[in-house]
Length: 271
Ligand SMILES: NC(=O)C1=CN([C@@H]2O[C@H](COP(=O)(O)OP(=O)(O)OC[C@H]3O[C@@H](n4cnc5c(N)ncnc54)[C@H](O)[C@@H]3O)[C@@H](O)[C@H]2O)C=CC1
Ligand SMILES: O=C(O)[C@@H]1CCC=N1
Image 1: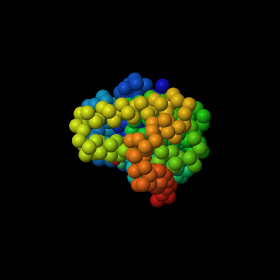
Image 2 (image 1 turned 180 degrees about the vertical axis):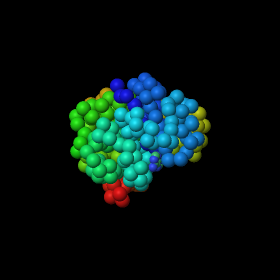
Image 3 (image 1 turned 90 degrees about the horizontal axis):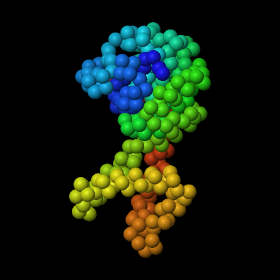
Image 4 (image 1 turned 45 degrees about the horizontal axis):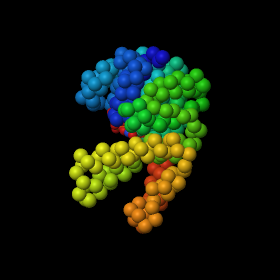
C-alpha cells in the first residue's frame, strides 16, 4: 500500500492511471493528489470525477508525497523538474510515464541520488488493460520496482525491461492503441461505404477484434497460420489481402512502428 501518490500533470495519461488506481480501490481517493500547470477546470473535473485531492501548490503536494508521478509532455519535463527540485528528497520515488525521457536525464536534472522508475503505460489503463513496461534508474532498488509494479498492476499488466528497449515498447504498446483505433476507424468508414448502418457495423467490428485477441491468446497457431485458415483460395479474404498487399500494408505497419520508436529516441535527445 502506498501512502500518497502525487501526479505532476493532469492530462489523459494521468487520468487513465487515476481511474485504474481508484476503481480497483488500490488507493483511497484521499491518497491521490493531482496538480498541473495552470488549468484549474481540469483539476476540478478530476476532483469531481474521482474524488481525489487537487492543488496548484506543488510544495504542499510533495510534502505529503510518497510516489511522484511525472505525467507532463516530454518537452515540459526539464522545467517541471527544476520547479519541483527544491521540494524533492531521497525518500520520494519518481515514476515517469514520459515517452523518450531517460532515467539518466531525470536523475541529472534533479541532481542528487533519487530513485527514478521509467514506465510506458497506455490509455487502456482506463479499463484496467494497459500493457505497461517499466525500467529502473541508477538509484532505484528492487523494492522500488516492486512498489511500482503493485501500483501499476492496478491498470493492467506490467513487465520489467531493459531501458534500451523502451523506445520500441513506446511505439508498440504506448502508441499501439492509436494504431489499432485507426484500423477500426478505417473499418467503420469502409462499412459505411459498402452500405452498412453503423449500429450494425460497430458491434460486429468490436466482437471480431475481441475474438481475434482471444484466438491469439488461446491458440497454439501463429498469426499467419490463423490468417491462412480464414483464407479460402479464390475467396473473399484472399481478395482483401491482395488489396492490402497492393497497398504495402505490412511495410506501412513496419515503418509506422520504426518511425514511432525513432520519434521516442528523438524526444529523449531534444532534452
Ligand atoms: N496519451 C497517451 O496515450 C500516453 C502518454 N504517455 C506520456 O504521458 C505524458 C502525458 O501525456 P498526455 O496525458 O497525453 O498529455 P496531456 O497534454 O493530456 O497532459 C499533460 C499535462 O501536463 C501538465 N503540465 C505541463 N507542464 C507542467 C508543469 N511544469 N508542471 C505540472 N504540470 C505540467 C499539463 O497542464 C497537462 O495537465 C507524455 O509525456 C506522454 O509521453 C505515455 C503513454 C501513453
Ligand atoms: O504520442 C505520444 O508521444 C505518447 C507516448 C505514447 C503514446 N502517446
